[in-house]
Picture 1 (cartoon, rainbow, N blue to C red):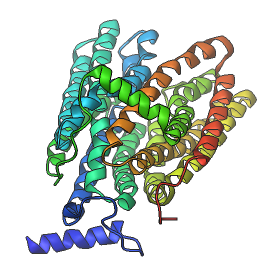
Picture 2 (picture 1 turned 180 degrees about the horizontal axis):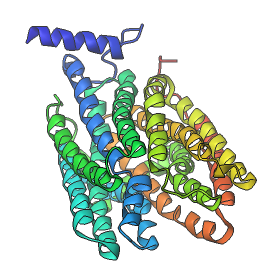
Picture 3 (picture 1 turned 180 degrees about the vertical axis):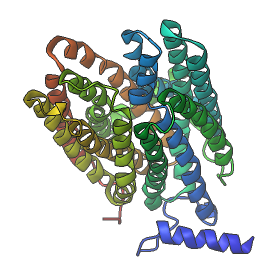
Length: 437
């Protein structure tokens, strides 16, 4: 056992300790000895969860599956709004209950377990149903999955903040993203090569995703988490007033939310990119494997780099990611106008750049929020920002209406402008990784 502990410590030193050697920054001293084990537990459970996410990607995989099952287009169009807003909007109301839990790893584990069951429900719906009925059943399962994800989102940042030091959090989440992306790439290659019938492969991916979430839940319970503050629970009306006061009085939080709201364009854009390519002559889903490969490849090549940079300056990560997103979306809009999207490689290449930016936004905003807050405000900051972003994502459904009226090219141009504005707000944020520049 001592040898195992020494090996784990050596691996942690190699991966997570830089030349300055600060391994226990901003966590309780009693948690320092548990940090190597906790670091790899986070990487393991988060890798499984992110892999499951990639296998059921609503923007690509579920859209293709529902199309193949004959589901009406109006139901397919609800996939991304249900998935994204359902994971964010409930957090204002769940944060208080989670706040009353001294050990919040149980909340994350429960949320992951429910996501696993919901993914198995998606598998059963696709196996047994067709057409509109399949669409409604799958949307119901996706809504349950999104609600469970909201519990994970609120609790995860708080657990991460208590168990991994400030200068190691981006590395942990970035490494998990890269590990999961490598396996999603295998899935994409299998889709491209037609090694198995595509329908069987996608259905198998849904079942595997359910199993992976359940395993990640049990693994997360192995964390050595110290009890944290439980103040902040109470009635929903009192919590709402408290959250409003936090938003009103904290200028940096408002700036962070403005930056994050503008940068949601990186999440909303892919369906419009696919639609623009379809209008240019490509079949939207003939290249499913190539699109999944581009998305997962971006996570593989960029997540660890973004994570390490976020440990030094999450503000700069958001700024660079906003610039990259603006460039990718502007190039897509121009390519749509010039007819370049009819070439089979152009859309995956542009999607690759956008997904690199998207990974930067995800890692940058997650690390910035955790490091900007302290143990007493982390859950509140997370709930407030995520709830507001959930509303923004619902409002983002208006882009679909605009695209139906004027086409995808202007919508992509507007999204490019939003990314540039988001980069501007990110630059105005304060550095929260003190001493790591």
